[in-house]
Length: 338
Image (cartoon, rainbow, N blue to C red; front, side, top):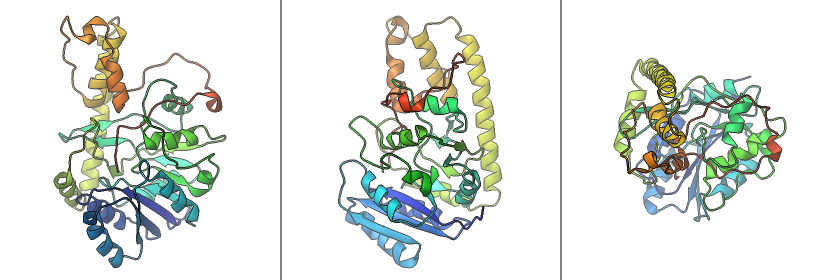
C-alpha cells in the first residue's frame, strides 16, 4: 500500500492551550505528506484560539473548527468530520500527547489489510516511568478482554488509534456522546470490537508519547511535554526509546511471573490489587494492615480496576464468545480528557 494514502488526523481539544501547539507540531512533522490535520474545538477559550489560528494560517494542512461546547467531548463533531472527509485512513491525537515522526507511516503499514490498528500501548506516567498495557487486537481473546460485561478495562487510547473510513461507515453509530459514567473512547471502540468480520492488529512498535492522567485529576504537563518534544528531534532518539520500551516490557514480564508465583493461594482480592500495582508499574504493593480492606476482604481492587489499572488475568481455555451477544460493559481507558 502506498504510504501517501490520504489520511485524516483528528485532534479534539477543549482548553489545553499550553500543550496543544506541541501536539499539532508533532502532527506536522509526520514523514508522510498527504495528511489533513483537523483540530476540533469543543467550546474552546480565547487562549486556545490564540495559539491555533496562527498555526492554521501557516500550514494549509491544518484546519481549526471552532465549535460550541458539546454535551460530552464533542464526539458528534468527530463523526461529522469523518463522514465529510474523503480520506481513506482516520487517525487520532490527544491534545496533550505527541506523535513520533514515523507514526502515521507505521500505522499505514499496520492497517494495510485490517480495519483498525493501534500502536504498542506505552504510557508515560507523572514520575517518568513507562507503563505497558499488554494487548494484541489480532487475538480474539484480547477483544473479549476489552468487552468484559462487568470489569472496566481498556488498552486502546485515543492517541494513535487508526482505522479505515470504510470500516467506520459500517459501524452502527460511529462517534456519539457516551452515557454518564462511560468513557468516550472505549464506548466507541466497542462498536468496532463487535463489528461482524472485524479485523485488527496492535503494532509491535511504540510510536506515540502518551502522557497519562490516570487518577482523575488533570495536571498541566506542558514543560515535560516540551522537553520530550525536543528529545524526539535528537539523533538516536528512536533507538533509545525502543530500547527503553523493550526493557520495560521485559522487566514487567519477569515481575508478572514472579508475582503470580508468589501470590498463589492468597486471597483473590489481594492478588488483584497486587497485580494492578506491580505488573503495570513494577512496584511491590504495600503489605496491608490487619484492619485494611485488602486484609479483610474489601473491594479496593475494584476502584483500581475502575481507574484503568487492570491487567489481564490468565483465563481458563474457553470458546471465543459471540461479540454481538455480549452485553455492553461499563468500561473504558483511564480518563484522558481533551
